Length: 632
Image 1 (tube, rainbow, N blue to C red):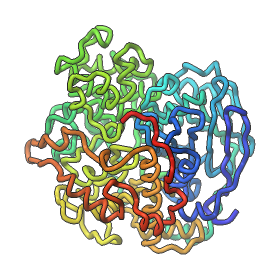
Image 2: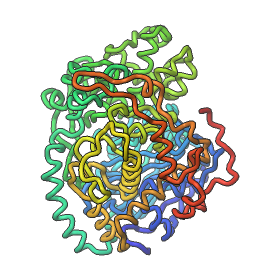
Image 3: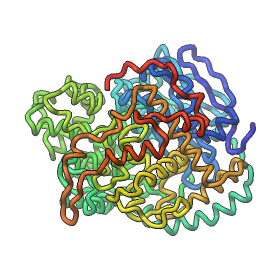
Image 4: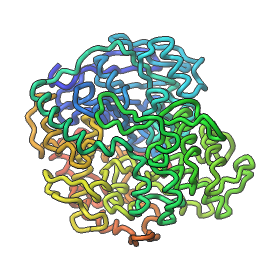
């Protein structure tokens, strides 16, 4: 077995031949890439070339747990899904919590690598140490809640599922993978649900009959450290747990971080007050929810049995990103409509961030006289029209109409297809729609969005909390780093990118490091207790640096260079002003030059020879790979 923290087994499943085999995990890979998204990236780099089509049978779909998964490390019931993204054409990655990763690891597996295309709709069932296929034409076309309930009633009521909805079946480029039924946790970003749909893989079910503990090198040392850490988490994140991310809406509105009117307006207090966490708690809130063995419980269940936006029973409610995407971004103040749009995205299998982004883009096209009600079946898709906004979610998922079908390609491709200057209204980086944090508020995000390996991604660095209240003394930062300060911001952003990469490798929820609840040294100690490896903080961060550069190499292979490390025009031409703030546009280009120098990348944005040698990545250098036939 080698290093502790792993079972040392990955299930390789070929859907074309319907064959499965268990393969060991290389010991060097465990040390170099740890697990989770980073280990998945190593497999992806070896299994694809610059010419691999994201929706082709040769593109692998990789589910990967980490060495912390299914241990008693708090907030570690997580897993990653890795593949080439059909939305961006480059490296794709999604991370989520819930119960799926925990139960997969309890089944004795560190991950799944799925290739090929099934001859018809199929589900994979992992039942303890047995893996088998369930032919599933009866599930094709069904929503994720229905499929989750049916598979559980048929096989194991306590099982966990990963399911695609019609969005994934219809190859919507930002289709998601929904886990845990009504208690939805989504692999939302990058359209990995469409990869699953292209393989005709409707669902994966993992039964509750897996009972294998994750082997830990020093269980007593880990237990003692966790006892202290749990107390800190409960004390420092208790308030956050009570409200979760929805509480950020009103705060970010006042600070200038909330997206408004497709990123044109600075502030909208009236909408923020009606769509923030307290408004939810006073109306549709039922109770808190959380992932397996998580002491934070930042989720929430909601219910709304009445009215035009009635929900189908109690279910997981919208997070901050969803509240902003279907709220202020679309100038919608109807909280019940946001909850309904959230339900439809979960049931039909769409990323709420990208869906809100493409709808806001379409609304601006309507405002500017580029699109008309006839393009949407007679609907007036104007800003603030909650009914039309909710209806568009279904139209996109089912590819219902020429323009909704085009919107299902994402804002980059939609703006190219629509033309007439609509590219100005398409907010994305490398094809991935903006998350709901403004790079004019956070210059760390300005740089991180531009250089993130999956496109516009706030989780690549999680800059904004560390510019507001959090800090990292072990990396030399003894106070928060002011959001619109350029000096030193580049090195700081690089450090955060490495740290977030290692958290996604372990797999550990990023919320644990907010409010200084858990220190980097403590997380490093947990890694040592779990795996038995002796590691310094510097060595720990080097693992994050190695994986970040590996993902960049995959993107270089796909044609990504300096030309792609850029924000959309609105972010370098339009200042953001509101009551109490007046933000200039970020100085991206000088920061980008410094970023390349500090990373040891070439002028074109490629890791240099010395960087490759120092990080041990020569194996992955794209010597003669063809450039991917992906439009950019």
